[in-house]
Image (tube, rainbow, N blue to C red):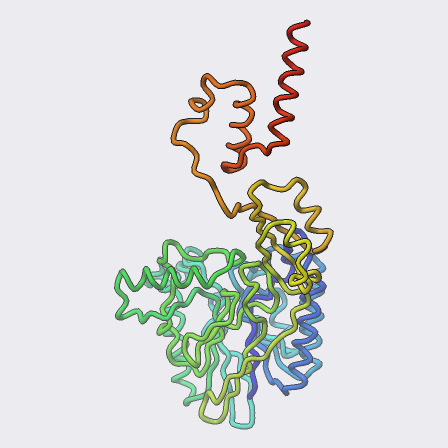
Length: 403
């Protein structure tokens, strides 16, 4: 059986005010083409199908179109919900969708009820664990401690392992949406947990809403021991925790923090004995993301930046003085520039005295020069500006003396 592992479609998300629906549609079209080209049997989506719990009609249209193409290409679909999704909305009419080979698992009490899909070697069990918020599901399991996400997933996985054991060694795949780290729970010390928390934070971009609380809800990788393959979602970059436990990342770049992360999906092949191989399949990037750093004049003139003219661009200007109308000028060369920050390459150390103290007993021209130095990170007025300051102050003084 060939399985294409995807996650975090985030249908409906905007990128710096720009809709991503059209570009995501292009990528999902390519996903369906891969299904046909690689003879994929099952496509799995490990949570965060939508970006919002209340997706717009256009977002549903994109999802419907993508699933229709995947089914026409010959693959079944197995979906579970993530922390961005409304489990109720995503799972609406899932019973009827299942009859068409589209299996949407969002109900928390169904995580140990597998979707069974057969291949030449027999049944493969697909278990979907929707994002399980402890406060919202603990009442379903009285007597089980569920204060943290790790405890909920630990309980869910034990139930799944028990179900697999009752099915005479059938092969199994688990979908889950969580922050999983490569630290065994049994040996994790406080320092190891802190390191894991820092590593998890470095993997996350500014799109992934934090579903941890000070590292308490990080989930140890060994919680998922047992299945032949575990398809994880939540982290937007691909990651291999073990050969059988992986993140696929998002199919589209949703943040400049993801700019260097490849976009694609894992092609997983099961044989009669379980996991046989895993291959990375690239997806197209409709408009690449680039971060440019330098002075304005350099960025506008240097031919080395020509390739970025068609990219989404985030600019970090290093001019000593913030250029006037910087974004408009940047967009004359990079029309898809969407973010600009000013970080001077050299920042002068200002005296420790307060701004008010530094202005005491100074001339008017010195006050203006001091203000410019203060707001320009230590860069005072140019010679031409100094002359203009003196001229304006002298004119003002003359007017006051004749009033």
